[in-house]
Image (tube, rainbow, N blue to C red; front, top):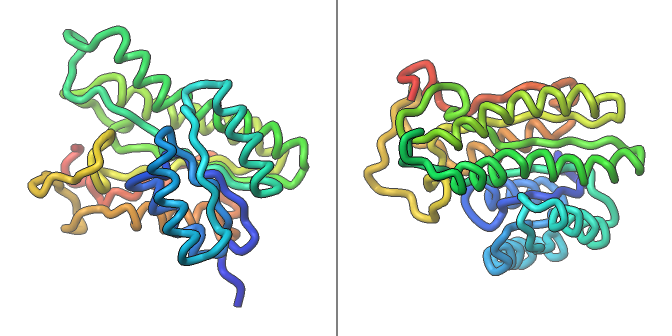
Length: 252
């Protein structure tokens, strides 16, 4: 029996750590070849090396700031050159403004968080979709959302705003790209792995959900693999909430 993602060629951004690295690893284990993209080339290279050691030829590291249109365009060209074509995009990039409120959030940090956490989704989809449409093979796009985009936050403003806007962006992308055979969705975790923008998960990180354990990067990777695969072929323009019931239990 073939692997569920056998023959798929994917770009995973933010893949140098945490959720992005777990998604890249899950894709490779499921038979895909992956561009491991990250603003930190050393981090991308470490993840790609680990994958290639276990599955030779499965991963290519590339560096890009996906809040920059010029760098995204270059990333897409390099990814196509490396893998021949791309049929899957997963965008895991985000930064946060926590802890801030409207009274102390700087203009510059507001713009930076919006650019990295929201504009990156527009840019990566735009430049990859152009090539997908030109090839005529269709494709799949998944952006990583967050429960922070589904309720008010007392200790952040730009990040929940960006994540809330992401859902509207994805719905319109699904409508516009559907005629070209491209599905677009989000997968939304709650407090998965290390906090946004950090590499280490605090031992005392508070979590409240209905499952009674922490969400892991592998939980999100499994959900993304499903959304990319053939069994989710009739799903587009929607969100898969993978929060252990956190929104139901606490709204936090």
